[in-house]
Image (cartoon, rainbow, N blue to C red; front, side, top):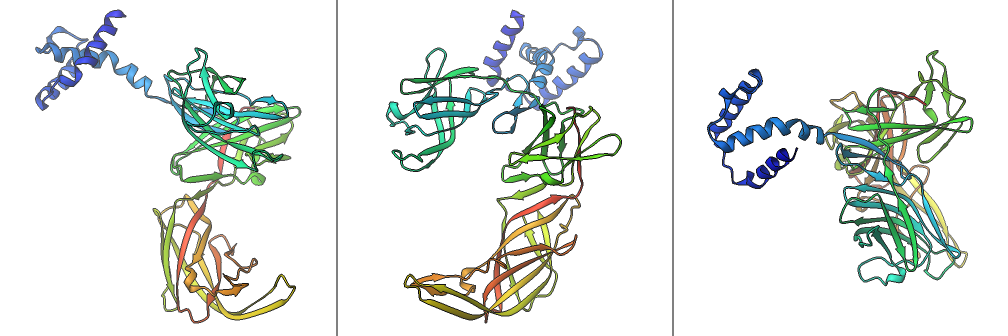
Length: 448
C-alpha cells in the first residue's frame, strides 16, 4: 500500500509539468484497450516512462475516484433540510436542540450540521448579543474545538426584536463557523459560559425502494421520515430543490396514506413544518399519496403591455415557460370609500375608475407536467388613481378585489386588477412570483 501512496504522490507533484499531445492521448487510449483485453500483457507497455505511470495510475485509481464522487442525500434534523454530501466525506449534525439557561435568559441551538470543515448553526436566545469581529467577548458567541482552537466566524444573519434591556428582547438566526479540520464536537463560548455541541453522523436518506422519490423533470427530491409517537404515525415531508429560487409546498390536508386494500387514511393533525400525524399502526406496504406539489418561483418577473385594442390570445413569457391570456375585459366602475380624520371628521371620496379582468389559461405551452396555480400582477403606479389623504398620496385598495384570483375551472384562472385611471387605454402589468402545481400525483412507498 505504501508503494501505491508513493506513486500517487509522485504523480500529483509532476502532473502539471506533463505535456500530452493528441498522438499521445490516442496512444494511451489504444494501449488501455489492449491491456483490458490481454490482461495487462507487457506488449502494451508505452515506451515513455512517464506515460506508463499515467496509464497505471489511470487503471489503479479510476474506480476509487468514481466511488468518491458519488453523492449521498442526508437529513438535517431541527430544520428539516436535505443536503447532498460526497460519499467519502461524512456529514455530522445535531440530532436534537441544545439549550443553556443563563439566569432567566437562555441560548438555544436548534440545529447544527457540517459541510466539510464548516459548521452551520441555527440559534436563538435573549441574552445580550453582539456579532462581528469587533464585538466585545462578553456579548459574543465564539466557537472552539476540543483542542481549544477558535473557529473563524465566516458569516452570520440575525434578526433582533426589542431593545436589549427590555423584557421582550429576542434574537434568532444563522451563524457559520469555519474550523481548521472537520469537527464532530466543539464548544460555543458566551462569556464564562460554555455550551457543548456533540454531533453524530447525519442520517442517510436511501434513494432506493421506499421513503424517497426523485422527480427529475422538475428537479425535486422528496424524502419521508417516519416515526411512531405514542399511537400515531408521524410523517415528516422533506423537499430538496435543485433551483434555490424555487419554494416547494405541499397540500397537507389533501395528502393521505393508501394501503394495499385501497383504503385511504387522512391525517388527524399537522404542523407548519410539513409534519403529519395519522392514527394507527401501519404495515410496510403502505404508500403516501401527494395529489400535487406547489412550486413557487420567486425569481421570475416579466412585464406585459395590455391595450384595449389587443387581439387574443396574448403570450406571456415567464422564464422558460409560456402562459396565454385568452381574454381581457375592461370594466368601468365608481370607486367609493370614506375615511375619518383625527378630528373625527368623515370624508367620502368617489371617483371613476376601471378594472381589468384577465382570463389566463392555466396550461403551460410546451409541457404537461405543470399548470398555473396562481400569479401576482401589478399595474404601474402612474396608471392608477391616487388620492390625497391628510396630505399623503394614497392608492385606493379594495381588499375584496385586489389581485382577486380564483379558479374558474380546471383550465382557466381569472385575475382582477382594479383602481386603474378612467381614461387609461393601455396598462403595463408586471407578473411576479408564479406558483405552479404538478399535474400528476406523487406516490411514495414508505416503511414506517
